[in-house]
Image (cartoon, rainbow, N blue to C red; front, side, top):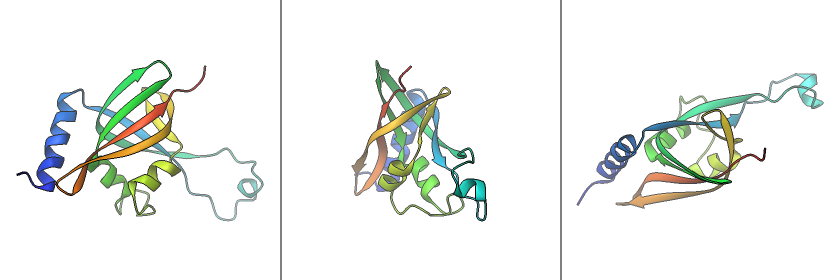
Length: 133
């Protein structure tokens, strides 16, 4: 029987083998304190992108799926990531995200599901909606 860490490593290796994509999780940048333009809604929104990889990406018409290693999500949630532990779970992280950038296209996250074994997550499956053109 594999350990929790072993299952994570197996999933990460499989994702690298299946294409090894790196998508970017787009998060709203923190607000600037004391900026009157921002307070009035006149400032252009700023974003930060965080790498999500290894991952695999599958697109079918207006929907897409992104399968991401849990280790990549843990790095974003953890301290020192630039988000400084603002999110207590991946579910909240994905709800707050502005989207996922794949090959320069921003996809909306419509759903996130954790895939788990041995008592821990090894992958996240993100359902994505392509932008209307």
